[in-house]
Figure 1 (spheres, chains in turn green, blue):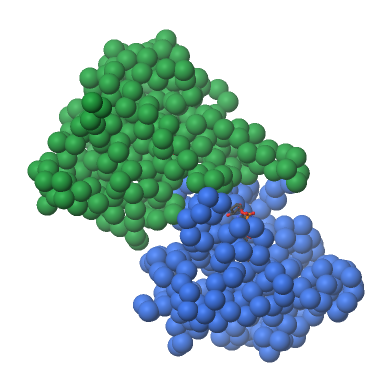
Figure 2 (figure 1 turned 90 degrees about the horizontal axis):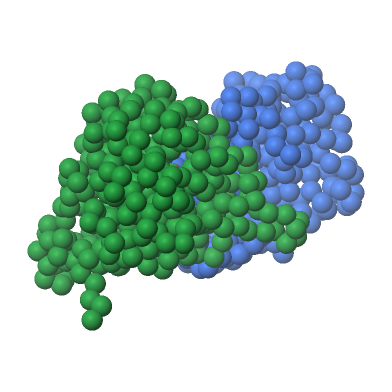
Length: 304
Length: 261
Ligand SMILES: Cc1cc2nc3c(=O)[nH]c(=O)nc-3n(C[C@H](O)[C@H](O)[C@H](O)COP(=O)(O)OP(=O)(O)OC[C@H]3O[C@@H](n4cnc5c(N)ncnc54)[C@H](O)[C@@H]3O)c2cc1C
Ligand SMILES: Cc1cc2nc3c(=O)[nH]c(=O)nc-3n(C[C@H](O)[C@H](O)[C@H](O)COP(=O)(O)O)c2cc1C
Ligand code: FES
């Protein structure tokens, strides 16, 4: 068995495989299929300050090798999370990371402040990249100034590991990554979904109720990989890579490109056991290539 | 009671073509199948092609504990159902099951009405068998475009009195299921109505049932990505806000629903 443990700031992961927010529920949904504690950690679905009903149906469209979603951050708000969900999450011994979303700087801060009090949540992932909410969300992640503003404000109230999740819907993602690094982020994660759309030609209407939605799944992998590589070149803080990872080979590509850990999203829908298979596959690859530790392949891409 | 969800490779042992776009696949598993209840469904993989990336949800059509078999009634609609619906004996399909809640069972001695439209008959076969196993009895009312699309009539007629409607009048009463006379005397004859079919049909059945003061349970369809409550893509509007069809449903009491469109 090769050494699979990696560190993201103060966060110690037993292996580099995490789950992507919004694709793994609160973990409970997967208890029948895997031992969630086998994972490096889980990122649970987005929490906002207030209860959100999310967008209207239809919220999903399948597209070649991927899917569009327009869930719109449906959740019951931070109070409900703290009182009803958090106590149940305490059963997991692995890292439980909260995904924090908002529509104003104040609302991000309000959620982050509450999360700071919860000792079983060692890190938050600040979602400044959701394409499915009208106000806020992705808007914060598409300019350096607003990304900086929200990161700085949250940094002031949050002491533990702060991961900022970046939007791919920008001209230069490395610039945004540098801006949040400078503002106190301990790590960046990327990519969130790509703004996209699908049309039903029989009805001549958009498939999603919101017209546009977010693309995820294998279709986005080459774009995600390129962005992870660019960001890893630019920043000194750890990078968590995601976008279309469905097997160990995909995960290894992201590690080689410079990601210290990876998140698995849409692939959980097709195979609820995929995360554990990826961990085993990474181990096999390391043993096969004679590596003692996964750290030997992180950022090991040979470009010359 | 929570039955552990399983990922299984099922082997098709029988393919019965019902007409040119519907088939019943009977499958077995090397491992013992978990207990499957009427109204529950499975997420079936059609293999990873460009157009069939996600699994497809299909109701449990029949389940035989002693023979360890499960069957699905598949309507060929797009790529996914075409691949799954053309599987032949000896071939395998990967499924996740059991998913979703189930129809509630009537008390012993009660009589209920099962209504189905088109391929909405899919969950009614196991439902009728379960109702009888619970010591209750049922009548079954199914409707379709034409005679050719009235499916599983022989099997269903062994489980209760079968009434039929067709839009073109080629069999049974002409019109929709709601045009059938049994729908006019619900309160007199039945303690509960169950419905599965296109939304407008279920809505019409539920409206009549509610007006007659009879409880109505409907089985909804919705586009699903995961089928296990993880993605929140499959919501329907209810009196308590958005609920997931895959975990809170697919069976709902009609009074809970604020039917979309
Ligand atoms: C709980 C449940 C039980 C069902 N039971 C049956 C059954 O017993 N027999 C049967 O023939 N059909 C059933 N359906 C409908 C069946 O799932 C769809 O017809 C099928 O997914 C269409 O896939 P396709 O690739 O052939 O079509 P496409 O139209 O090519 O599918 C494209 C995408 O839309 C989704 N989609 C399209 N229509 C539906 C729909 N009505 N419901 C859910 N997703 C849809 C597919 O999952 C896919 O992602 C059920 C649906 C649900 C939600
Ligand atoms: C249904 C769905 C819901 C999502 N919800 C969230 C969310 O609440 N917060 C967030 O930061 N990202 C969310 N995402 C984005 C994923 O976490 C991930 O960034 C993206 O899907 C790319 O990874 P993948 O291709 O492996 O799915 C969601 C994605 C999907 C498919
Ligand atoms: S299909 Fe994913 S929550 Fe229902």
